[in-house]
Every structure is written in structure tokens, then in C-alpha cells.
Amino acid sequence: MEVTIKIFRYNPEKDKRGHYETYTVEAHENDRVLDVLELVKGHKDGTLSFRRSCAHGVCGSDAMRINGRNMLACKTLIRDVGANITVEPIMGLKVAKDLIVDMNPFFDNYKKMLPYLINDNPLPADGKERLQSPEQRARFDESTKCILCAACTTSCPSFWASDEYYGPAALVTAHRFIFDSRDEGAEQRLHVLSETNGTARCHTAYNCTEACPRDIQITKAIGELKMAMVTGKID
Amino acid sequence: MRLSAILLVPLVWIHAILNTLIAGPENINLNYVAMRWSSIGWRIYSTLLLAFAFSHGITGFRQILFDFATNSTTRRILNLFLFFFWIVLSLVGATGIISGVGK
Amino acid sequence: MIKNIFNGVSGYISYRGGASHWTFVMHRVSGLGTLLFLSMHILLESTAHFAPHYYDRLNAGLRNPFALVAEILLAFFVIFHGVNGFRIAYIDLFRKDLWSLPSGPKTAKATWIISFILWIPALIIMLLHSLKLI
Image 1 (cartoon, helix red, strand yellow):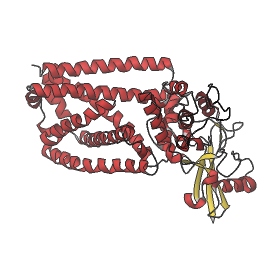
Image 2 (cartoon, chains in turn green, brown, orange):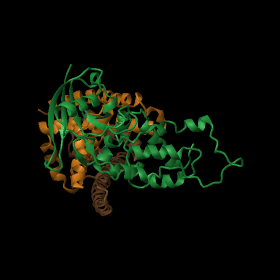
Image 3 (cartoon, one colour):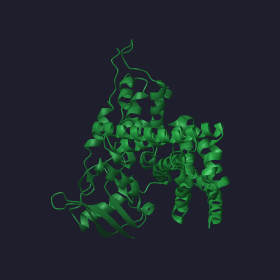
């Protein structure tokens, strides 16, 4: 079938502002949007730039706005979005070229969550491992699935307003460590979260959960963080 | 926010249903206001409504502004501005309700 | 801050999110609209005390089609803001499991439906009242 794809183009060396270009390519309805982008780059216009790596929804490189909504290009089939596709870079981050955005503010926010295990206690007597029951592991299982593609953070109205808001992805990371029974850094992280750009800026608009390609229940996780901050208890 | 919101739902809706839907705008005039404000119960009701509704609105507006303004100086200026707006209008409204219709 | 407002608002408008995105935008719009009305309402009603001779004249000045449309819109704003606020508070405090797919967008859709159901009688009664004014 014939697919018409409208792509946001911006070359920082030539253009003052971005514009759209439309291409028509022959593709199968079971092809992914990423395949169509590759067809355009390979056969129509070699100057098109976009990030991609594994192409299987694991590396989190190719989050983009497809028909106005954040998705992973490698997990979106043509038949699900129709033959007329508009592809734009994700919002709230500065566009570097075409569909590539500057991810630095996103990762700066991620680093503020101290994304590593904090535990200075000595190992148990046998010196092997800190045991965790299946229930304790299941408590934060959802939030370990995050691939840091930024689809959630750049769908968040509070993040569009200011990239100083930590954003859903960073909060999911905080959730992953705070609710881990082996980790001792919960208090430190809750302190970071209680700052004015932390969970206070989450207004439960729910775009993050709908945008997440890994089906993480982000709004629920943030709700649990908010409750933990109010009650001071982690269960 | 939440506390005032939960109180506001019955307060505002009763206020709106009574004055807009039952009384109707064509019947609202100075005499109607004087009649309502002659009872102490309605005065307390109106004062509570004013206090909760307006502070809820100002806090909500502040939340929206703080989404956009992250600079601490800007935030301080906005806080001051909102505080004065809140206190002046609350006082104007409360004076009106408590001292009743003028002559 | 101006740049932030531009970015934020263009996101509100251009993002094609589901029902929950539009409920969020509507919650903001209705809140701001109601606050604007409330500020004018406080000033207007306070003239009953400060300048009683002008009260009836000011009130009559507000009886025009524009004010009627604004008033009917305001009724929807107040109803919507109340229903949606109740939904958010209830889910946030008691039913966090509803912040998940697919129940999240469903509750957002329900908010719109309940608001319209509550608004239609208000709309009819307000129009009937406005007929008496003509």
C-alpha cells in the first residue's frame, strides 16, 4: 500500500525554524513506522536524521510523536496509525536535527534521582547476598521495565512548561529504588522528590501512562510516591 | 486544596442552583440581595463560600503559574502579587457581606 | 517564563492525547475561567454595599446575549471542575489502582459524560429564565 508520511525537518546549519516535508513510499501494512523512515532515508532523502538502534523496543532510542502522540517508531505498525502519518520530534526538549532532540535535560533529571543501589550495611553473615522474597521483588517489578526512551516525560504537560520538572521517567526510577527492600536510600530520594519541581508538579494528566511503550502504570507509581511522602511510610 | 474542594462542591452548587436556577437572574436586584443578607445564616454561608472559593482559586492559579515560572525570584514576585490580589478582594467581598447592603 | 508559557500552551493544544489529556486541559481552562468570573463577581456583589445605587444598573448591564452564553459556559465549567476534581481526589486517596490502563481513560470519559448530564438541565432552566427577561 502507498503510505504518505509527513516528517518534521530542521537543519540547524541552514534553517531558522523547522518545516514539514511529505514523502510517498510503498510499504506493507504490517511494516513499522521505523521501516517507513528507513525507506525514506534510503531511497528518497538521505539527509533525514533520526535515532534508532535495536529496532525492537528495548533500547529506547526512537521515541517520536506519531500522529500527535508519543510512541516508539519501532513498535508502531502502519495499520494501527493509517496510511497518512505525521512524524514529529518529541516535545519539551530542544530539537538538534530533524527528529533528534537534545536529551541532556532528561538525563540530568534522571541523575537527580540517585539511580543506583544505596546500601552501606555489611553483607549478611554468610557473605553471599541480600535475600529478597518474590513478594518484595514484585513490589517494584513494574518500574524496573523502564527503557528511558523519554516518551512519558515529553508527553507530560508539566514538563512542556519547564524542563526543570523531573518528569515521569525520573519519578519511575525513584519508585524503582525507594520500594526496593535492599535499598537504604529512600529518605534521601524522598527529600529530593519533595522539592518544588518534584512530585508537586504532577497534576495527574495521565499522558505518561498512555504514552509508555512498556505499559508501566506510571501515574499509579507516582501516586504511591506521593502517598509515601505524605505518610512517611514505605509499604 | 482538597479540603476546600470537597467543601466547595456542595457550597458552590447550592449557591448556583438557588440563585441562578431557582431565583433566576431576572429576579436578582438590590432587594433580593438585601433579603438574603438580612439572615445571619446566609451571611455566614456567603462568607464561607467567599473564603473557600477564592482561596481555592488563587492557590490553583498559583499552581498553574509555578508550572511555568521556575525561577525563584519570579516565584517570589508572583507570590506577593497573588497574596495582595487575594487579600484585597477577600476583604472587599467580606466587608460587603458582613456589613450588608449600603444606603 | 514567556517562552515556557508558549511551549506549554502549544503542547496543550497540539498533543493528540486521549480523553485524559483533554480532561486535564479542560480542568485548567475551567479553573481559570471560574477564577476570572469569581473576581468580577466579588467586585460586582460588593457594590451592593459600597455603591448600592449602581447595583441594579450594573446588574441590568449584564443581561445581554454575550453574558448569557458566558453564564451557560460558566455553568459547565463549574460542574466539570467539580466532577473532575472529585474524581482526582477520590482516585488519588482511595483507589490508586484506577490510575492504570484501561480504567484511567475510562474514568476521564465518565467525567465528561456526567458533566454533560448535569449540565443539560441547568442549560434548559437558564434558557427558560432568559426568555422571561425579553
